[in-house]
Amino acid sequence: KAIAFPNNLFPTISSMFKLILLLIIEYSYSLTTTASNMGKNKRRNEISIVGPEYIQVLQGSLLNKQVSLILCGESHQDAIDVTRSGGVFDPHDGWIEMKKNDIFQPIFIEDAEIQGSANPNDDILNKLMVQVYATSKKCFTIEKAKEWAKEAVADSEIYGQVAFLWVTQNVEARIPKGRVFLLRFLSKAQLDNDQEEDDDDSEEGTWINPKLQPNDLPSPVKDWLFDDDICNFGKSHRSFEWGDLDLEAFQLNRRRLTNEVVSSDEIDKIIEDRKKKLHEENIQTWDEWFAFIRKSTEDGEIDVDLVLEAQVPPWELSLYRPQYSTTDNESYSLPHAAKCIRCVSEDEEEAVEDMFDPSGDGIGSYMDYVYRKFMKDSLLNKSNDKECAEWIHCVDMRDIGCEASIPSELVKDKWMSNMLTAEEQLLMQNLKNGTFLTLEADEAEEKVKFVPERRMNPERVEVEKMLSSGLLPEQEIDDDNGEEDNVVTFPSFESFFGQSTDFLYYSKHVKLCYAPFLAKCIESLDRWEQFFTELFLGGTIPKALSLLNLDGGNHKPYFYVRSPIRQVWNKDTGSFEYHYRDDGEHFIT
Image 1 (cartoon, one colour):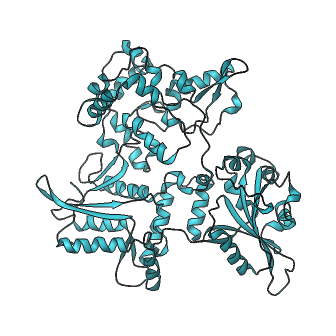
Image 2: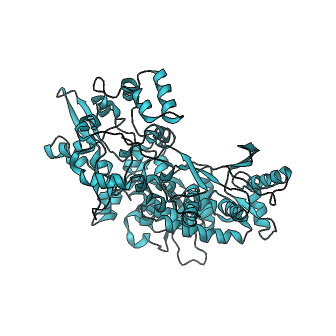
Protein backbone atom coordinates (compact mmCIF):
# COMPACT_ATOMS: atom_id res chain seq x y z
CA LYS A 1 0.00 0.00 0.00
CA ALA A 2 1.06 3.57 -0.57
CA ILE A 3 -0.64 6.92 -0.29
CA ALA A 4 -3.56 6.59 -2.72
CA PHE A 5 -6.19 9.12 -3.74
CA PRO A 6 -9.83 8.56 -4.73
CA ASN A 7 -10.88 8.95 -8.35
CA ASN A 8 -13.71 11.30 -7.51
CA LEU A 9 -11.20 13.80 -6.10
CA PHE A 10 -8.58 13.49 -8.82
CA PRO A 11 -10.21 12.10 -11.99
CA THR A 12 -7.27 12.62 -14.30
CA ILE A 13 -3.52 12.75 -14.13
CA SER A 14 -3.56 16.32 -15.40
CA SER A 15 -5.79 17.47 -12.58
CA MET A 16 -3.49 15.78 -10.10
CA PHE A 17 -0.51 17.67 -11.44
CA LYS A 18 -2.52 20.89 -11.21
CA LEU A 19 -2.91 20.12 -7.51
CA ILE A 20 0.78 19.39 -7.10
CA LEU A 21 1.66 22.58 -8.95
CA LEU A 22 -0.65 24.53 -6.65
CA LEU A 23 1.03 23.04 -3.58
CA ILE A 24 4.48 23.95 -4.80
CA ILE A 25 3.51 27.48 -5.77
CA GLU A 26 1.77 28.08 -2.47
CA TYR A 27 4.77 26.81 -0.55
CA SER A 28 5.81 30.23 0.67
CA TYR A 29 9.07 29.12 2.27
CA SER A 30 10.56 28.60 -1.19
CA LEU A 31 8.72 31.33 -3.10
CA THR A 32 8.54 34.52 -1.09
CA THR A 33 6.35 36.23 -3.68
CA THR A 34 3.52 33.99 -2.58
CA ALA A 35 3.66 35.52 0.88
CA SER A 36 3.03 38.99 -0.52
CA ASN A 37 0.11 37.67 -2.56
CA MET A 38 -1.41 36.13 0.54
CA GLY A 39 -1.04 39.39 2.38
CA LYS A 40 -2.87 41.31 -0.35
CA ASN A 41 -5.85 39.00 -0.49
CA LYS A 42 -6.21 36.77 2.54
CA ARG A 43 -9.90 36.15 1.92
CA ARG A 44 -9.56 34.76 -1.59
CA ASN A 45 -11.40 31.59 -2.54
CA GLU A 46 -8.44 29.25 -3.01
CA ILE A 47 -7.10 27.29 -0.05
CA SER A 48 -3.31 27.32 0.23
CA ILE A 49 -1.46 24.33 1.67
CA VAL A 50 1.80 24.80 3.59
CA GLY A 51 4.13 22.17 4.96
CA PRO A 52 6.15 20.12 2.47
CA GLU A 53 9.23 21.54 0.80
CA TYR A 54 8.58 19.68 -2.44
CA ILE A 55 6.02 17.28 -3.92
CA GLN A 56 6.65 14.39 -6.32
CA VAL A 57 4.07 12.01 -7.79
CA LEU A 58 4.57 8.43 -8.95
CA GLN A 59 1.69 6.49 -10.48
CA GLY A 60 1.50 2.92 -11.67
CA SER A 61 0.66 -0.68 -10.83
CA LEU A 62 2.02 -2.43 -7.76
CA LEU A 63 0.99 -5.98 -6.78
CA ASN A 64 -1.95 -5.76 -9.20
CA LYS A 65 -3.20 -2.55 -7.60
CA GLN A 66 -3.32 0.92 -9.10
CA VAL A 67 -1.19 3.07 -6.83
CA SER A 68 -0.46 6.78 -6.55
CA LEU A 69 2.60 7.52 -4.44
CA ILE A 70 2.80 11.15 -3.26
CA LEU A 71 6.25 12.01 -1.94
CA CYS A 72 6.21 15.06 0.34
CA GLY A 73 9.65 16.39 1.24
CA GLU A 74 10.07 17.75 4.76
CA SER A 75 13.00 19.90 5.89
CA HIS A 76 12.76 19.59 9.69
CA GLN A 77 10.81 22.79 10.18
CA ASP A 78 9.48 23.59 13.62
CA ALA A 79 5.71 23.29 13.92
CA ILE A 80 5.62 26.82 15.30
CA ASP A 81 7.21 28.05 12.04
CA VAL A 82 4.84 26.10 9.77
CA THR A 83 1.92 27.89 11.45
CA ARG A 84 3.18 31.45 11.00
CA SER A 85 0.89 34.03 9.46
CA GLY A 86 0.89 34.13 5.68
CA GLY A 87 2.48 30.72 5.40
CA VAL A 88 5.95 32.27 5.68
CA PHE A 89 8.17 29.95 7.72
CA ASP A 90 11.01 32.37 8.45
CA PRO A 91 10.50 34.47 11.58
CA HIS A 92 10.00 38.20 11.14
CA ASP A 93 12.57 39.55 13.57
CA GLY A 94 12.54 42.93 15.22
CA TRP A 95 13.21 44.70 18.50
CA ILE A 96 11.33 43.67 21.64
CA GLU A 97 11.67 45.69 24.83
CA MET A 98 13.08 43.48 27.57
CA LYS A 99 14.47 43.81 31.06
CA LYS A 100 18.22 43.37 31.44
CA ASN A 101 18.15 40.05 33.29
CA ASP A 102 15.60 38.61 30.84
CA ILE A 103 18.08 39.30 28.05
CA PHE A 104 20.81 37.40 29.92
CA GLN A 105 18.62 34.47 30.98
CA PRO A 106 19.21 32.13 27.98
CA ILE A 107 22.98 32.61 28.28
CA PHE A 108 23.28 31.27 31.82
CA ILE A 109 20.36 28.87 32.08
CA GLU A 110 22.69 25.83 32.28
CA ASP A 111 25.08 27.47 34.73
CA ALA A 112 24.28 25.70 38.01
CA GLU A 113 26.37 28.17 40.03
CA ILE A 114 24.36 31.14 38.84
CA GLN A 115 21.01 29.36 39.06
CA GLY A 116 21.66 28.49 42.70
CA SER A 117 23.31 31.76 43.65
CA ALA A 118 22.00 34.05 46.37
CA ASN A 119 23.37 37.01 44.38
CA PRO A 120 22.91 36.02 40.70
CA ASN A 121 23.36 39.56 39.32
CA ASP A 122 26.89 39.80 40.64
CA ASP A 123 27.75 36.29 39.41
CA ILE A 124 26.36 37.10 35.95
CA LEU A 125 28.62 40.15 35.65
CA ASN A 126 31.61 37.99 36.62
CA LYS A 127 30.94 35.57 33.75
CA LEU A 128 29.39 37.90 31.18
CA MET A 129 31.24 39.03 28.06
CA VAL A 130 29.99 42.16 26.28
CA GLN A 131 30.77 43.34 22.79
CA VAL A 132 29.82 46.89 21.83
CA TYR A 133 29.01 46.03 18.24
CA ALA A 134 28.10 49.50 17.04
CA THR A 135 27.40 52.95 18.48
CA SER A 136 25.31 55.71 16.90
CA LYS A 137 26.92 59.08 16.44
CA LYS A 138 23.55 60.83 16.33
CA CYS A 139 20.62 60.79 18.73
CA PHE A 140 17.39 59.11 17.61
CA THR A 141 13.83 58.67 18.76
CA ILE A 142 12.97 55.13 19.86
CA GLU A 143 11.42 54.24 16.48
CA LYS A 144 14.36 55.67 14.53
CA ALA A 145 16.72 53.88 16.93
CA LYS A 146 15.05 50.57 16.06
CA GLU A 147 15.53 51.27 12.35
CA TRP A 148 19.19 52.20 12.85
CA ALA A 149 19.90 49.10 14.93
CA LYS A 150 18.01 46.87 12.48
CA GLU A 151 20.19 48.08 9.60
CA ALA A 152 23.28 47.38 11.70
CA VAL A 153 22.35 43.71 12.24
CA ALA A 154 20.56 43.06 8.93
CA ASP A 155 23.69 42.20 6.94
CA SER A 156 25.54 40.50 9.81
CA GLU A 157 25.44 36.88 10.91
CA ILE A 158 25.80 37.63 14.59
CA TYR A 159 24.39 35.24 17.15
CA GLY A 160 24.17 34.99 20.90
CA GLN A 161 22.00 37.50 22.70
CA VAL A 162 21.82 40.71 20.65
CA ALA A 163 20.28 43.86 22.11
CA PHE A 164 20.48 47.60 21.84
CA LEU A 165 20.52 50.14 24.64
CA TRP A 166 18.83 53.50 24.06
CA VAL A 167 20.00 56.26 26.40
CA THR A 168 18.56 59.77 26.58
CA GLN A 169 19.64 62.78 28.59
CA ASN A 170 16.25 64.49 28.39
CA VAL A 171 13.42 62.17 29.44
CA GLU A 172 11.03 65.10 29.87
CA ALA A 173 11.26 66.19 26.22
CA ARG A 174 8.09 65.94 24.17
CA ILE A 175 9.85 63.62 21.75
CA PRO A 176 12.95 62.36 23.59
CA LYS A 177 16.00 61.32 21.59
CA GLY A 178 18.98 59.27 22.66
CA ARG A 179 22.14 57.49 21.58
CA VAL A 180 22.06 53.85 20.58
CA PHE A 181 24.52 51.15 21.68
CA LEU A 182 24.23 47.85 19.81
CA LEU A 183 25.42 45.07 22.13
CA ARG A 184 26.14 41.38 21.89
CA PHE A 185 26.35 39.10 24.94
CA LEU A 186 27.92 35.68 25.54
CA SER A 187 29.24 33.90 28.59
CA LYS A 188 32.99 33.44 29.00
CA ALA A 189 32.59 29.72 28.30
CA GLN A 190 30.58 30.33 25.14
CA LEU A 191 33.11 32.82 23.89
CA ASP A 192 35.94 30.34 24.48
CA ASN A 193 34.01 27.78 22.42
CA ASP A 194 33.17 30.17 19.62
CA GLN A 195 34.98 28.90 16.53
CA GLU A 196 34.14 32.07 14.59
CA GLU A 197 35.22 34.64 17.15
CA ASP A 198 35.50 38.14 15.74
CA ASP A 199 39.18 39.07 15.29
CA ASP A 200 38.44 42.78 14.94
CA ASP A 201 40.97 44.65 17.06
CA SER A 202 39.00 47.89 17.13
CA GLU A 203 37.70 49.15 20.45
CA GLU A 204 34.08 48.44 19.53
CA GLY A 205 34.86 44.91 18.28
CA THR A 206 36.58 43.63 21.41
CA TRP A 207 34.95 41.52 24.11
CA ILE A 208 34.84 43.03 27.58
CA ASN A 209 34.14 41.54 30.99
CA PRO A 210 32.18 44.15 33.02
CA LYS A 211 33.77 43.16 36.33
CA LEU A 212 37.39 43.09 35.16
CA GLN A 213 37.21 45.89 32.59
CA PRO A 214 34.36 48.24 33.60
CA ASN A 215 36.20 51.34 32.40
CA ASP A 216 36.51 49.88 28.89
CA LEU A 217 32.75 50.13 28.50
CA PRO A 218 30.92 53.31 27.44
CA SER A 219 29.58 54.99 30.57
CA PRO A 220 25.89 54.54 29.65
CA VAL A 221 26.43 50.81 29.09
CA LYS A 222 28.32 50.46 32.38
CA ASP A 223 25.56 52.31 34.27
CA TRP A 224 22.92 50.05 32.71
CA LEU A 225 24.82 46.89 33.67
CA PHE A 226 25.59 47.86 37.28
CA ASP A 227 22.66 50.06 38.34
CA ASP A 228 19.45 48.05 38.74
CA ASP A 229 17.45 51.22 39.39
CA ILE A 230 17.85 52.39 35.79
CA CYS A 231 18.03 49.15 33.86
CA ASN A 232 14.56 47.64 34.21
CA PHE A 233 12.26 49.61 31.93
CA GLY A 234 13.72 52.89 33.13
CA LYS A 235 12.92 56.07 31.21
CA SER A 236 16.50 57.13 30.54
CA HIS A 237 17.90 53.66 29.71
CA ARG A 238 15.72 51.32 27.67
CA SER A 239 16.86 47.95 26.34
CA PHE A 240 15.53 45.96 23.38
CA GLU A 241 16.35 42.39 22.38
CA TRP A 242 16.52 41.30 18.74
CA GLY A 243 13.94 38.56 18.40
CA ASP A 244 10.83 37.11 16.80
CA LEU A 245 7.97 39.61 16.49
CA ASP A 246 5.52 36.70 16.54
CA LEU A 247 5.22 37.03 20.32
CA GLU A 248 3.62 33.62 20.81
CA ALA A 249 6.52 31.97 18.97
CA PHE A 250 9.03 34.19 20.78
CA GLN A 251 7.69 33.29 24.22
CA LEU A 252 7.50 29.56 23.45
CA ASN A 253 11.02 29.44 22.01
CA ARG A 254 12.36 31.47 24.94
CA ARG A 255 10.93 28.85 27.30
CA ARG A 256 12.54 26.08 25.25
CA LEU A 257 15.91 27.88 25.22
CA THR A 258 15.83 28.32 28.98
CA ASN A 259 15.21 24.60 29.51
CA GLU A 260 11.72 25.05 30.86
CA VAL A 261 9.81 21.81 30.45
CA VAL A 262 7.20 22.35 27.76
CA SER A 263 5.06 19.27 27.28
CA SER A 264 4.17 17.93 23.86
CA ASP A 265 0.49 18.34 24.80
CA GLU A 266 1.01 22.06 25.39
CA ILE A 267 2.90 22.47 22.11
CA ASP A 268 0.18 20.60 20.22
CA LYS A 269 -2.51 22.83 21.75
CA ILE A 270 -0.59 25.95 20.69
CA ILE A 271 -0.22 24.59 17.14
CA GLU A 272 -3.93 23.76 16.89
CA ASP A 273 -4.85 27.30 17.96
CA ARG A 274 -2.43 28.82 15.46
CA LYS A 275 -3.88 26.67 12.67
CA LYS A 276 -7.31 28.13 13.38
CA LYS A 277 -5.88 31.61 12.83
CA LEU A 278 -4.40 30.44 9.52
CA HIS A 279 -7.89 29.37 8.41
CA GLU A 280 -8.86 33.05 8.44
CA GLU A 281 -6.21 33.53 5.74
CA ASN A 282 -7.49 30.52 3.74
CA ILE A 283 -4.34 28.59 4.62
CA GLN A 284 -4.23 24.99 5.80
CA THR A 285 -1.28 22.91 6.96
CA TRP A 286 -0.33 19.66 5.25
CA ASP A 287 -1.68 17.48 8.08
CA GLU A 288 -5.15 19.02 7.65
CA TRP A 289 -5.02 18.31 3.92
CA PHE A 290 -4.03 14.69 4.55
CA ALA A 291 -6.75 14.26 7.19
CA PHE A 292 -9.27 15.51 4.62
CA ILE A 293 -8.02 12.95 2.08
CA ARG A 294 -8.34 10.10 4.59
CA LYS A 295 -11.81 11.12 5.68
CA SER A 296 -12.93 11.37 2.03
CA THR A 297 -11.94 7.74 1.44
CA GLU A 298 -13.18 6.10 4.64
CA ASP A 299 -16.23 4.52 2.99
CA GLY A 300 -14.68 3.80 -0.41
CA GLU A 301 -12.50 1.13 -1.91
CA ILE A 302 -9.34 3.20 -1.80
CA ASP A 303 -6.69 2.52 0.87
CA VAL A 304 -4.78 5.56 2.10
CA ASP A 305 -1.65 4.89 4.16
CA LEU A 306 0.88 7.36 5.54
CA VAL A 307 4.61 6.58 5.64
CA LEU A 308 6.75 8.88 7.81
CA GLU A 309 10.47 9.36 8.28
CA ALA A 310 10.15 8.52 11.96
CA GLN A 311 11.16 5.74 14.33
CA VAL A 312 9.68 2.34 13.49
CA PRO A 313 6.99 1.64 16.15
CA PRO A 314 7.26 -1.35 18.49
CA TRP A 315 4.34 -3.29 16.97
CA GLU A 316 6.29 -3.65 13.72
CA LEU A 317 9.28 -5.14 15.54
CA SER A 318 10.11 -8.25 17.53
CA LEU A 319 12.90 -8.88 20.00
CA TYR A 320 15.42 -11.52 19.05
CA ARG A 321 15.56 -13.89 22.01
CA PRO A 322 18.59 -16.20 22.07
CA GLN A 323 17.99 -19.48 23.88
CA TYR A 324 20.44 -20.08 26.69
CA SER A 325 20.50 -21.48 30.20
CA THR A 326 21.66 -19.75 33.36
CA THR A 327 25.00 -21.57 33.00
CA ASP A 328 25.65 -19.50 29.85
CA ASN A 329 25.75 -16.19 31.70
CA GLU A 330 29.46 -15.72 30.98
CA SER A 331 28.93 -15.78 27.22
CA TYR A 332 26.18 -13.19 27.52
CA SER A 333 28.05 -10.79 29.78
CA LEU A 334 30.08 -7.77 28.76
CA PRO A 335 33.55 -6.84 30.04
CA HIS A 336 34.74 -3.28 30.33
CA ALA A 337 35.59 -1.22 27.25
CA ALA A 338 39.00 -1.62 25.63
CA LYS A 339 41.69 0.91 26.54
CA CYS A 340 41.64 2.38 23.02
CA ILE A 341 37.93 3.24 23.50
CA ARG A 342 38.56 4.92 26.83
CA CYS A 343 41.43 6.87 25.25
CA VAL A 344 39.17 8.48 22.63
CA SER A 345 39.71 12.22 22.95
CA GLU A 346 37.27 14.49 24.72
CA ASP A 347 34.25 15.86 22.85
CA GLU A 348 34.59 19.24 21.25
CA GLU A 349 32.24 21.94 22.42
CA GLU A 350 28.91 22.39 20.70
CA ALA A 351 28.81 25.27 18.23
CA VAL A 352 27.73 28.47 19.99
CA GLU A 353 24.99 29.21 17.47
CA ASP A 354 23.42 25.81 18.26
CA MET A 355 23.07 26.84 21.90
CA PHE A 356 20.62 29.51 20.79
CA ASP A 357 18.54 27.18 18.61
CA PRO A 358 15.29 26.19 20.37
CA SER A 359 14.65 23.29 17.98
CA GLY A 360 17.25 21.26 19.85
CA ASP A 361 14.64 20.15 22.40
CA GLY A 362 13.53 17.29 20.13
CA ILE A 363 9.74 17.67 20.42
CA GLY A 364 8.83 20.83 18.53
CA SER A 365 9.37 19.85 14.91
CA TYR A 366 6.46 19.71 12.49
CA MET A 367 7.25 16.05 11.76
CA ASP A 368 6.94 15.24 15.47
CA TYR A 369 3.61 17.04 15.59
CA VAL A 370 2.33 15.08 12.56
CA TYR A 371 3.56 11.84 14.15
CA ARG A 372 1.75 12.51 17.43
CA LYS A 373 -1.45 13.63 15.73
CA PHE A 374 -1.86 10.69 13.39
CA MET A 375 -0.56 8.05 15.81
CA LYS A 376 -3.19 9.19 18.28
CA ASP A 377 -5.87 9.20 15.60
CA SER A 378 -4.95 5.73 14.37
CA LEU A 379 -4.49 4.10 17.80
CA LEU A 380 -7.64 5.52 19.37
CA ASN A 381 -9.90 4.99 16.36
CA LYS A 382 -8.73 1.63 15.03
CA SER A 383 -11.14 -0.93 13.58
CA ASN A 384 -9.61 -3.93 15.36
CA ASP A 385 -8.40 -4.95 18.80
CA LYS A 386 -4.71 -5.04 17.90
CA GLU A 387 -2.37 -2.79 19.85
CA CYS A 388 -1.09 -1.08 16.73
CA ALA A 389 -1.81 1.70 14.28
CA GLU A 390 -3.45 0.49 11.09
CA TRP A 391 -2.58 3.00 8.39
CA ILE A 392 0.49 4.89 9.61
CA HIS A 393 3.95 3.40 9.10
CA CYS A 394 7.45 4.62 9.94
CA VAL A 395 10.71 3.77 8.22
CA ASP A 396 13.56 5.44 10.18
CA MET A 397 15.76 2.82 11.83
CA ARG A 398 18.36 5.13 13.37
CA ASP A 399 16.75 5.29 16.82
CA ILE A 400 15.03 1.89 16.99
CA GLY A 401 14.68 0.85 20.61
CA CYS A 402 15.41 4.28 22.11
CA GLU A 403 12.30 5.07 24.09
CA ALA A 404 13.47 8.63 24.83
CA SER A 405 13.50 9.55 21.14
CA ILE A 406 9.79 8.82 20.62
CA PRO A 407 7.80 12.09 20.53
CA SER A 408 4.48 10.42 21.51
CA GLU A 409 3.74 9.21 25.02
CA LEU A 410 1.00 7.03 23.58
CA VAL A 411 3.54 5.07 21.52
CA LYS A 412 6.07 4.87 24.35
CA ASP A 413 3.55 2.90 26.38
CA LYS A 414 3.48 0.22 23.66
CA TRP A 415 7.15 -0.72 23.88
CA MET A 416 6.67 -3.23 26.68
CA SER A 417 4.28 -5.15 24.42
CA ASN A 418 7.45 -6.65 22.93
CA MET A 419 7.97 -8.50 26.21
CA LEU A 420 5.71 -11.54 26.15
CA THR A 421 3.62 -12.36 29.21
CA ALA A 422 5.18 -15.81 29.47
CA GLU A 423 8.65 -14.27 29.48
CA GLU A 424 7.64 -11.78 32.12
CA GLN A 425 6.44 -14.55 34.41
CA LEU A 426 9.58 -16.59 33.85
CA LEU A 427 11.93 -13.68 34.38
CA MET A 428 10.07 -12.59 37.50
CA GLN A 429 11.20 -15.89 39.00
CA ASN A 430 14.80 -15.54 37.83
CA LEU A 431 15.62 -11.86 38.22
CA LYS A 432 18.84 -12.56 40.11
CA ASN A 433 20.30 -15.01 37.65
CA GLY A 434 22.30 -12.26 35.96
CA THR A 435 21.45 -12.11 32.27
CA PHE A 436 23.16 -9.97 29.63
CA LEU A 437 20.06 -7.78 29.47
CA THR A 438 19.46 -6.87 33.08
CA LEU A 439 15.80 -6.80 34.07
CA GLU A 440 13.93 -6.00 37.23
CA ALA A 441 10.39 -5.83 38.50
CA ASP A 442 8.44 -2.61 38.42
CA GLU A 443 7.23 -0.91 41.60
CA ALA A 444 4.14 -3.10 41.78
CA GLU A 445 6.28 -6.20 41.06
CA GLU A 446 3.86 -7.18 38.33
CA LYS A 447 5.88 -6.41 35.20
CA VAL A 448 9.47 -6.83 34.13
CA LYS A 449 11.32 -3.91 32.61
CA PHE A 450 14.83 -3.36 31.32
CA VAL A 451 17.14 -1.64 33.74
CA PRO A 452 18.11 1.85 32.48
CA GLU A 453 21.43 2.09 30.66
CA ARG A 454 23.18 3.82 33.55
CA ARG A 455 22.78 0.68 35.67
CA MET A 456 23.24 -1.88 32.87
CA ASN A 457 26.30 -0.60 31.00
CA PRO A 458 29.42 -2.02 32.71
CA GLU A 459 31.31 1.21 32.00
CA ARG A 460 28.66 3.30 33.73
CA VAL A 461 28.73 0.93 36.70
CA GLU A 462 32.51 1.21 36.77
CA VAL A 463 32.22 5.00 37.05
CA GLU A 464 30.49 4.58 40.42
CA LYS A 465 33.22 2.20 41.63
CA MET A 466 35.98 4.57 40.53
CA LEU A 467 34.27 7.45 42.30
CA SER A 468 34.11 5.44 45.52
CA SER A 469 37.77 4.47 45.30
CA GLY A 470 38.93 8.01 44.46
CA LEU A 471 40.18 7.19 40.96
CA LEU A 472 37.73 9.70 39.48
CA PRO A 473 37.53 13.32 40.73
CA GLU A 474 34.00 13.69 42.09
CA GLN A 475 33.73 17.34 41.03
CA GLU A 476 33.80 16.26 37.37
CA ILE A 477 30.43 14.51 37.62
CA ASP A 478 27.42 16.52 36.45
CA ASP A 479 24.44 15.47 38.55
CA ASP A 480 22.04 16.64 35.84
CA ASN A 481 23.60 14.42 33.17
CA GLY A 482 21.74 11.20 33.91
CA GLU A 483 18.54 10.16 32.27
CA GLU A 484 15.35 9.34 34.12
CA ASP A 485 15.20 5.83 35.50
CA ASN A 486 12.06 5.00 33.53
CA VAL A 487 13.67 5.69 30.14
CA VAL A 488 14.92 2.54 28.46
CA THR A 489 17.02 1.79 25.41
CA PHE A 490 16.32 -1.64 23.96
CA PRO A 491 19.35 -3.32 22.35
CA SER A 492 19.30 -2.66 18.61
CA PHE A 493 21.78 -3.27 15.80
CA GLU A 494 19.78 -0.78 13.73
CA SER A 495 20.42 1.95 16.29
CA PHE A 496 24.03 0.89 16.90
CA PHE A 497 24.91 1.43 13.24
CA GLY A 498 22.28 3.99 12.30
CA GLN A 499 23.15 6.50 15.03
CA SER A 500 26.40 7.33 13.22
CA THR A 501 24.46 9.32 10.60
CA ASP A 502 22.80 11.38 13.34
CA PHE A 503 26.18 12.40 14.70
CA LEU A 504 27.59 13.20 11.27
CA TYR A 505 24.55 15.38 10.59
CA TYR A 506 23.73 17.00 13.89
CA SER A 507 26.39 16.37 16.55
CA LYS A 508 29.78 16.66 14.90
CA HIS A 509 31.34 17.66 18.21
CA VAL A 510 30.74 14.19 19.71
CA LYS A 511 33.66 11.71 19.61
CA LEU A 512 32.95 8.02 19.06
CA CYS A 513 34.96 5.30 17.40
CA TYR A 514 33.73 2.32 15.37
CA ALA A 515 37.20 1.39 14.08
CA PRO A 516 38.06 -1.17 16.82
CA PHE A 517 34.71 -2.94 16.35
CA LEU A 518 35.17 -3.05 12.57
CA ALA A 519 38.76 -4.29 12.84
CA LYS A 520 38.32 -6.85 15.62
CA CYS A 521 34.78 -8.14 15.05
CA ILE A 522 33.92 -7.52 11.37
CA GLU A 523 37.51 -7.99 10.13
CA SER A 524 36.94 -7.59 6.37
CA LEU A 525 34.85 -5.70 3.83
CA ASP A 526 33.48 -8.95 2.36
CA ARG A 527 32.28 -10.07 5.79
CA TRP A 528 30.80 -6.59 6.37
CA GLU A 529 28.69 -6.91 3.23
CA GLN A 530 27.60 -10.44 4.11
CA PHE A 531 26.74 -9.39 7.65
CA PHE A 532 24.55 -6.50 6.52
CA THR A 533 22.84 -8.60 3.87
CA GLU A 534 21.96 -11.26 6.43
CA LEU A 535 20.94 -8.78 9.11
CA PHE A 536 18.79 -6.37 7.10
CA LEU A 537 18.00 -7.87 3.71
CA GLY A 538 16.20 -11.13 4.30
CA GLY A 539 18.60 -13.21 6.36
CA THR A 540 18.43 -14.24 10.00
CA ILE A 541 19.99 -12.76 13.11
CA PRO A 542 21.78 -16.01 14.13
CA LYS A 543 23.32 -16.31 10.66
CA ALA A 544 24.37 -12.64 10.71
CA LEU A 545 25.98 -12.99 14.15
CA SER A 546 27.78 -16.16 13.07
CA LEU A 547 29.70 -14.10 10.53
CA LEU A 548 31.24 -11.91 13.23
CA ASN A 549 34.19 -12.69 15.45
CA LEU A 550 32.42 -12.06 18.75
CA ASP A 551 34.29 -14.34 21.14
CA GLY A 552 37.63 -15.29 19.65
CA GLY A 553 40.62 -13.46 21.14
CA ASN A 554 38.47 -11.71 23.75
CA HIS A 555 36.97 -9.22 21.32
CA LYS A 556 34.08 -8.15 23.54
CA PRO A 557 35.89 -5.04 24.88
CA TYR A 558 35.70 -3.73 21.30
CA PHE A 559 31.88 -3.84 21.23
CA TYR A 560 31.92 -0.28 22.60
CA VAL A 561 32.19 2.85 20.48
CA ARG A 562 32.45 5.23 23.45
CA SER A 563 32.96 5.18 27.20
CA PRO A 564 32.01 7.56 30.02
CA ILE A 565 35.52 6.95 31.37
CA ARG A 566 38.25 8.98 29.68
CA GLN A 567 41.76 7.58 30.07
CA VAL A 568 44.58 10.11 29.62
CA TRP A 569 48.34 9.58 29.65
CA ASN A 570 50.16 11.78 32.16
CA LYS A 571 53.70 12.24 30.86
CA ASP A 572 54.86 13.70 34.20
CA THR A 573 53.89 10.63 36.23
CA GLY A 574 54.45 8.15 33.40
CA SER A 575 51.04 6.58 33.94
CA PHE A 576 47.41 6.81 32.93
CA GLU A 577 44.94 8.88 34.87
CA TYR A 578 41.14 8.76 34.68
CA HIS A 579 38.57 11.47 34.08
CA TYR A 580 34.81 11.45 33.70
CA ARG A 581 33.77 12.12 30.12
CA ASP A 582 31.08 14.79 29.89
CA ASP A 583 28.69 12.07 28.83
CA GLY A 584 25.49 13.84 27.83
CA GLU A 585 25.57 11.56 24.75
CA HIS A 586 25.75 8.39 26.91
CA PHE A 587 22.99 6.68 24.95
CA ILE A 588 25.34 6.01 22.01
CA THR A 589 27.82 3.91 24.02
